[in-house]
Amino acid sequence: MSTPNPTQPEPMPGPDPDRPPVPDPTPNPGPGPQPPDPAPPVPDPGPDPDPQPSPDPLPGRPRPPIPNPQASPGGSSQVTR
Image 1 (cartoon, rainbow, N blue to C red):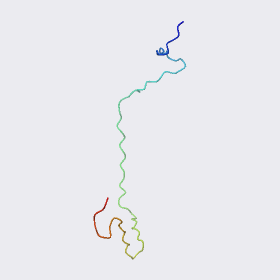
Image 2: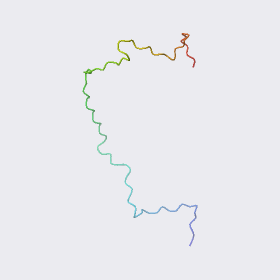
Image 3: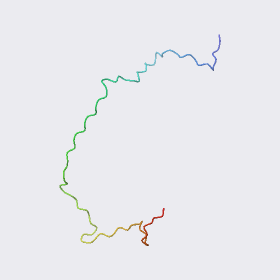
Image 4: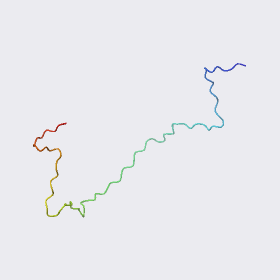
């Protein structure tokens, strides 16, 4: 009785009776790829029946100017990077 050599791979065992067979990874393709269903057309809502006016901070007074942090007090248009 000889001991098996550990460097040689063991012969592949037969199918395990307790394990179910592995299903085929490539399923039946069937009649072929089906084209996607076309998206239903979206109805045009038309103009807004109740447009919201832009909110003013104080009605009757002009809006304050927004300070530009990029503008230098010297009026130079060059920006240092």
